[in-house]
Each structure stands twice: as C-alpha cells, then as structure tokens.
Image 1: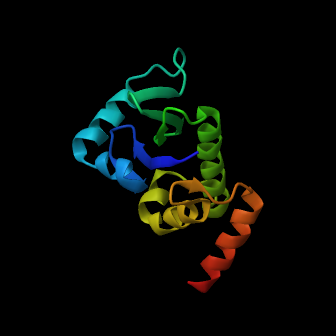
Image 2 (image 1 turned 180 degrees about the vertical axis):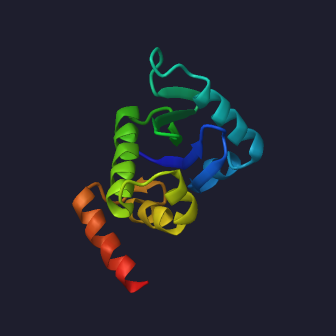
Image 3 (image 1 turned 60 degrees about the horizontal axis):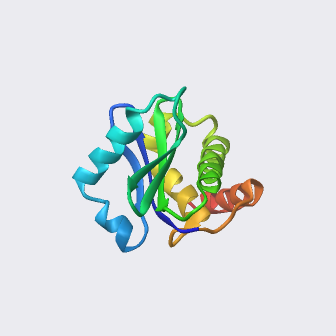
Length: 146
C-alpha cells in the first residue's frame, strides 16, 4: 500500500493539512486538481454513496468526514480502500487523543502537531506505525522536547 497524498480540508474546500508523497502526488498538488478533489468529495451524498471514488483511472480517493473536516487519501487503484479508511480513522483518533478533542481550530492553530502526527504515522507514503498507543508514546516524547 502506497499513499500518494493525504489532505484535510473543511466544508468550504479550504485546505488545512496536506502531504504529498512521490511524483504522482506532486502532480496532484496544483490548484486545479485540489479543486477537483474537493468537488468530488463534497458533492457526494454521505447516506447513499460509499467513501471511495475514482479520481482518475489509476488513482482512487478514500475519504471520511469528521465534524467539519474531510480527510482524504489518494492511492493507486490496486490498493485496499478499507485499509486506507482505517488509516484515516487512526489518524483522527491520534489527533483527538494528542490534542484533546481536536477541532478545525486546533488543526489551524496547532498545525505543527498535526504534521508531527502525520510524520510519525507515514513515511514516504507508507504506513510507519499502526499502533495508536505507540504513536502517542512517541508523540508525547517529541512534544516534551519542544
């Protein structure tokens, strides 16, 4: 499983977090592609449609909405979407545990902590650590250094 990008935006489509991995992710970094992703994800009916959508013939989007934020991962079409969805949920769980019931304002004003979580979980587009407890232990150690 290789993640091409991991982004977070609000309901208005304003990007709050973004990490691109590799050359395919870099090509998607331009504003037109971001607008396309925002439209694809926000225009879907959450009660009738699943959380997976094809962006192109070789890129799938996996997304989940938590409160007012959408968390989106882009991956190749051959990757397992359920694992990607699980990784998004793990990221949000760690974000909540580390920041204490995180909201959009926490992501905006303490973005460095959100990126620290992302860096602990993912490296080069690959999942580095899948244990919530291990991630939190490491984050608390890193936070004490600051």
